[in-house]
Length: 125
Image 1 (cartoon, rainbow, N blue to C red):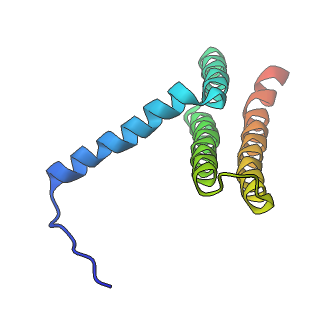
Image 2 (image 1 turned 90 degrees about the vertical axis):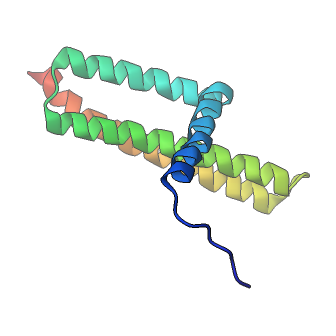
C-alpha cells in the first residue's frame, strides 16, 4: 500500500494548527477535569508569583502543569475513542480506560511531588 504525500507547504502546516487549537478549546469547554486542573494551575502560578520563584523552579512548575494537562487530554481522547469502538460494556475497554485514568493520576502525583519540592522549602523559610 502506498501513500501519496503532499508537498510541504508552510501554509498547510499553519492551517493544521487550527485543528490543534480546536482540540484544546473543546477540551477546556467539554471536560470538567480540565477546568479543575486549570484552576489548580492558576492557584499554583499565583503562589509562584507571590513567592517569587526562581527560573529553575518555574521550569519545574510549568513542566508539572503541562504534564498533568497533556495526560488529561490524552486520557480524554482515549476515553472518547473507546466509547466509539465499544458501544456496550466490555471489560477490555474498561481496562483501557482505567489505564488512561491511571496515567493521569500518576502525572498528578508526580506534579504534586514537584510542587512539594518547590514550595515546601519556601514555607519553611
